[in-house]
Image 1 (cartoon, rainbow, N blue to C red):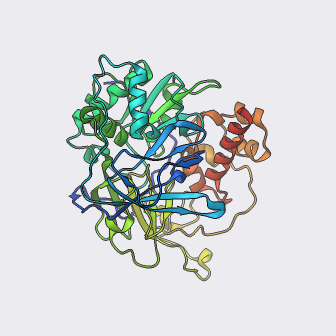
Image 2 (cartoon, rainbow, N blue to C red):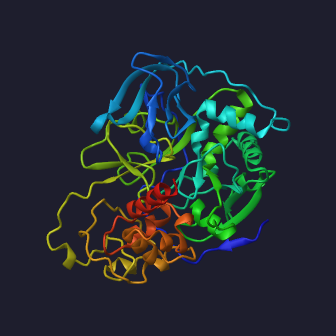
Image 3 (cartoon, rainbow, N blue to C red):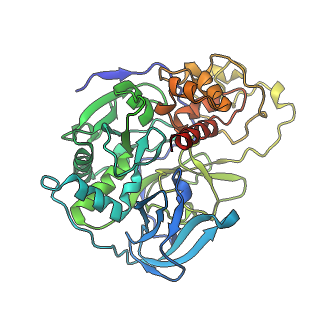
Length: 446
């Protein structure tokens, strides 16, 4: 067993509605959507029109910034809609499923003999390349690059996050084949991080550099793990892949067919029966959780980093859970003066600190508006990385590229600052600030 990397900084937020480890079968959704908005920096160019017949793996659009990167249909059926926003911006492409789940035929690969470019080409054709993200910047990887390493986090520490050992139960063969794919791409063993003392088969994967972590959230963030294993410097490129997508890659290489099904957690205090469900990426929300009552927010992902999804919307491509929590649209008269035994706080402003093991039913209310951004030293207590978060955020706001580089912009993406945003008394949208800084770096580097 590898040496345990113990992180002392962080915060676990104990919420009501943890998914019970039981798998509930759900029928296929009537519609699935693929959205370029699920990916950063993508400018889509359509390859289909309404009425076209497609199969799982049929390209729907490509990225104008890198024409080799295709975004494909997760199911077979008919293109039923191309939804657009302002200035005819493509919001998503909707496919009405035919229930047959036919797949485009792709070549199966002998990974012991296949060349790296052959593996890349198959992943590009199938659309699975879009599951590989590049650090720095958190964008879809460029297939022309050679990363110094590939990193996979085999656990998630976010509030109500799924237990991947349960979600991927029985997928050992697919996971093993998936890490072999990553080994070809990396030109060496991929780095896989597991949680200390956790049960499951992740730690027994062959051909990986295994790392064991212990600590509070964000210990499961792959960016935090990279920081403690092999930090990113200027000029470095590393790739990251979600553990669920590793299994999907493995199944694809084994069968030559695209199967985008995965087990997600349906969690949150407003979930009728928090549990796990087997779905296909991009499924309609209603097909997963049924009719959602008023006053409930549906989030694709976890409460810290997920995106708000309409009740008639679709599961985001990169989401491994759906979270349902109350909307924070109820005004509390003189709420600031109440003892607030049921409200969570990292300070002792609320009396809830007397009950450290309580599970909380939190809503989306920010309990205040944006205010002056002052130096408090608070964020350094919760970000387990050797950077100065306050100084980095202010450098981004000032547009100072040199300071952004010196203060660690290459090492972070939005999710790494989600916990800082949660504890922030100034109510600053830190994740958007980080994305703005990253986009500025990309623009200036062009």
